[in-house]
Amino acid sequence: MRIIVVNNYEEMSRKAADMMASQVILKPDSVLGLATGSTPLGMYKELVDRYEKEGLDFSKVTTFNLDEYYGITRENTQSYYYYMRNNLFKHINIDLQKTNIPNGSAESIEKECEEYEERIKKAGGIDIQVLGIGSNGHIGFNEPDINFEAETHLVNLDEETIKANSRFFNSKEDVPVKAISMGIKTIMQSKKIILLANGEGKAEAIYETVKGKINPNTPASILQLHNDVTIILDKNAASKIQ
Image (cartoon, rainbow, N blue to C red; front, side, top):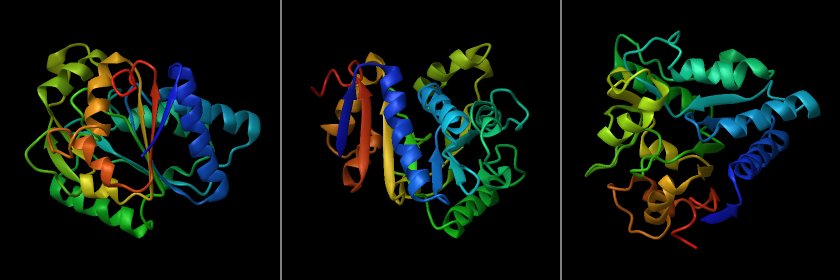
């Protein structure tokens, strides 16, 4: 693991954008694994800025998102499909046919999960995967459990995750209780991984990820076994490991 500690959220976002931009420049047809939530928003704004001001070219890029809520349509303003379109895709020159996000309203979720895995394999695997981390140590929507789920699957969201995500909805009751998520095996097969975290609320999860034992109760701890992980933290998120 390579750990980079920066002063604040803005610096964390720039560092992450540097790595993503370098990946795209060095390999224009890169397969990017993308995350949602509040943590990567700054990174996406930086990438849009580099497209507009420096001509960073996304025309050959393929993307796969980590997850999507189950039971909401893509038109729903809280869907991750909507999030990606409005925070990144519509602002850059990406081919929307090459963007992939699980369909949370698919008739057969099992078939959707299987086909999502096949699309990742057909694309040649993910070159660089961006991850956030939940305060309970989840990556994607792989929640603390006694087992690691291997591939893309339907997951019951942890109460802590529902509570944390309720800030994006009108009320806690509006938050979906299930989601489709890439599994641990799928994430771990990515060639490179970037994990982003900011704020004191993530400090304990980061400590368990970096210093703790590899344990399904802290799903992110599995990253200790990956050979190319960069963790970018602000000072508050890094407070327990420094």
